[in-house]
Length: 393
Image (cartoon, rainbow, N blue to C red; front, side):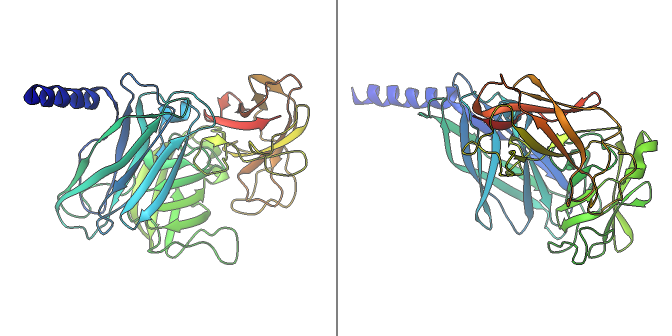
């Protein structure tokens, strides 16, 4: 009888492991000093999961990690939160202000940036403390599959910056760039040795020896660190459909990429800088819109975004907008809760770096209320990222 019970219990455990939700990472190989994309894949199996978290331990002497929200979680209107528990351990949490289940797929885009001095070998990425909840807040089983990064070769045998590491600064999505767009570059050893910001002005074309060029034109840099650079695409890029991006260190090119150029790639900034969830939106009384401070139907809200393309007259790269410029050259529209919103103003945001636009629009009187009502900004035929919300009374 004891043997039979043990067998049944073991089979039950195996069944739970086989059919519970799962987080997994694939194994990767790369050379020292390179950046690789490692998707964190979520599989719900038969469960309905509205939020999950896990801890990830890694060798911080060998690599650094950066993460953005993947499309399946973004389309489920979730946000990504990352916390440093220790120098070699991060906690990742995906959750949102809704009961929508998280779709299967790459929920997190994990950039593994290898140090140039890392020795060849196998480095583990270990998952722990996994937890998940259903749409009603009940805990459900979830398992995890660890992975490894195999380092082999020599410095210079791989890329420091890849296409997927050129991100819109508001949405954190990769893709084509547009004139005046704020962008974030994620890679290995692409920026200053320590985090830096311009001291005497909002931006600079050379930051601690680092510069970013588009077809030879220097881009204003807002922030630089070993694995990240925030910059502004030059407005003069409007006359071309492709561009060559170069990252220079002390005048020497260390990364190069061809990029497509489009007229606009609008994206709304978010309160938590994850590219999804509550947008960076002010209510009519200039307070921050949030689930605890919703806007009233019929009131005017101010939405802050980037990627609206060229304005007329052109903005001045990297300078604070002290006067209100005309609207972007392309038509601007907003939909809130699926309804058209009246746009009162669309143009430069006074007192904020050029490339950021402010759109003042009216919340439709018959819009549905809630803490996470969808909002979409359209510039020409291009739309802002999925998963953006504002709170309405």
